Length: 476
Image 1: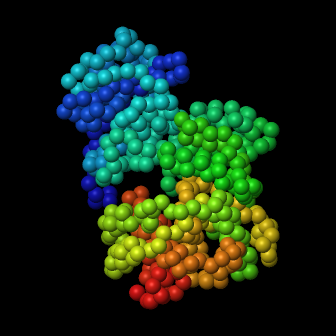
Image 2: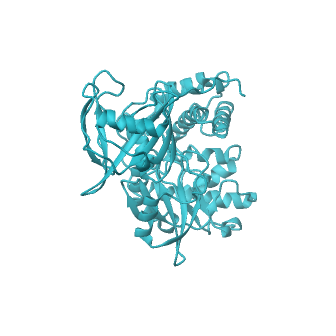
Image 3: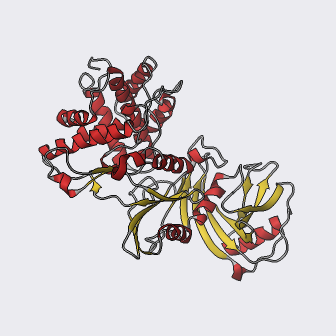
């Protein structure tokens, strides 16, 4: 035992009453009303177990009758999804979602004091506003997965809101491939698939598969964890990525309802963890600089929108979350940079990758031995792409040349110009804010590597404040 308090969480049941409509599958939803939690939001028919005498199937059948007036035979109940949920207030529970496609009697509102509307809605066009917890279960169900973690954070809205989507599906044992709807979407786009390989990153809710076709073709299938990431990547793949040619994946198909894409396969392997000689490293970093230049020049630069400086509004919240893991003086250092950000001139906006780091840059084996700028480099994972200052793409790359000024210089050689003083100052500020954000995220999601990387970057910024990328030219 860890000595921590044991979980004593309630279990609730949710009914996915499903029928075939004119536009596809439909589910029954009711709108909560009155003096209840989440009043005014749409939700599935649901409820708690009455006590230890009642199992989850019996509870589901009882709630269906009490709330919607339908009779369901236990033999017609199918387990669909389990969701481990934590509300914004910090209370956790486990939700068991069950599907039923056969029932007796027409559903109607049986509890008007707590429900003011009930109706059928397309599974692929759910209404708003909707309880985020319920939406997490239905999104997991739609994707063909069977379990998800949905731990909301303090301040998150109760209603589903894409920027605050905390749903993280957990693959089941023996399911190396995606769910049936994603398989169908993929095969409609590229033909029959004979092999699936899960190539997801180990963190951040990544869901990516390598799909091998019956005729030998290879594609990547990606399921985005929220609407914001989906729209960012699709926009990048349709706008600036094609201008990179073979150095970026090509969008083959997109399903907005699933938040899924099929992409062409890219040659090479991620640079993260690759061991190169000093000569090879400089050649690779020159090519990385040239690749960054191609991204940033994909469209003409434009004036930054008003109030588009560093994300200082989130600094205090991230500092509070990261507090116990910061070293003495770190918080004061970051707050000093935040104050400095108010005096920085705005930087032009360009297209940016948004997560430009070694793990998202692929190289072929011939790049290992290249002594000049020949060789192939490509970039993947565009889900954080959006317009911004060019130095946005140097924030996470900076960890790769830490303590290696010759690699930074090689990058700038490939990039074609040095950074301006304003860019150097902005880079330090953004690196510090990204570090604190990373520590806070790593603490919340049990990722010690992310915490350590943030601590390491803050320490480097503080001790090297008078050298490269210093906003003041003076040691802090």
